[in-house]
Length: 463
Image 1: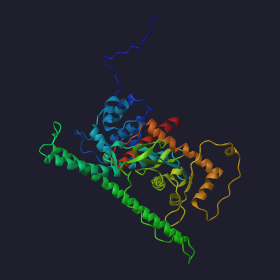
Image 2: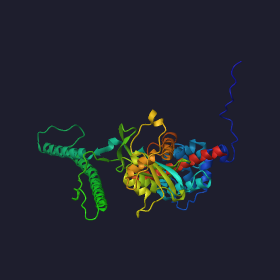
Image 3: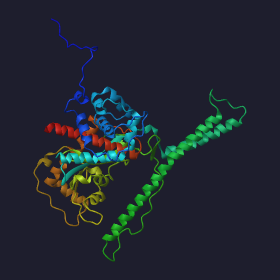
Image 4: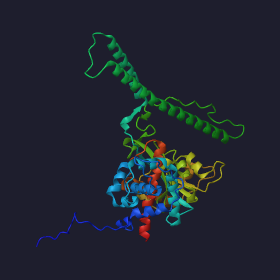
């Protein structure tokens, strides 16, 4: 007897449910996002005047569409528009309407205040649902490189730009000499000397434009270095007994304002930077995305983006970005890349020197994940450092205590999995928008979509 196949009839009309919500399972993420957005205050919305068509779409629907699309790995406005035809959950969110890609892109680009407020309100909703602990929380802080919407091959270094400008000047001179010579060899078909001269002059102008911001960044870098040197000199003076003289009392040499030869400018996204990626074995045109993750819920309570190639200056702004409604932060966990004495002091003490109530636990040196036999042996509690101990000595002591080691182990199992979910599960590995301000907006949108995906999973597990 042959196999009995299920009867598949493509021609007989189907009686579909009259309500689009019934087309999607009741516990689906699309329902959760629709219901969550209905609870948000959307008073900061900027309504699209029009897209390529004349329709005005409700802001709550467009926000739900964006959040669901980002949570499920759709980031391009054209692909999101196509999903309103191809995807049943997306059709349900849009109520069988089809906003065009220009409307979607404009809504995303012009609603920075709404997206940032939605980030906060979703976390407050998580607090009301008891999924996010409020007050006395522990956060793990880290950064990850996310590709910019620009190729590293569209970049030029300061030195190479200068060399190329000299080459172009030489070629222009050669072309002008060729134009003056009556018996010169003609150019290939379709090429003229005036056009070739103009083309090289335009390219030189572009390179000059590229060198200008590199020079401005070098001057800003020198100013910061000068200010830091003056600050260190002032601290050294303050620590010298009255009547004494600190070592090296001479004024520090002003730092050079000259750009470095390898300083880069990218023609596609000038605010992105060449950064080490992966395990540091290659370079990519990227941005540095930061997150402060509450360790129990694995929700991002503070986030930001910079174009700094490393994390050394990111601890203070990332902790400062933690939303006030999360309550008092008790402990901040950070790896060695975020540690500096200045950053730890800024987190643990306010400007007037009073304690903030936060304690930083940071690795002060890179260690192997492998534990030797000596590491397994029980050891006596370390001796606490004295009152005059440096920040690095205090940090080494904290990291050697049983409580400090137990808390620090939470860092690796919280913030790194969050980045893994965003990049591998949600598929967000490259920013679609360009420019630091727009990239920061998109990272907030990604973080909010991650929250809703995470809360949906937690709510499904509970009930």
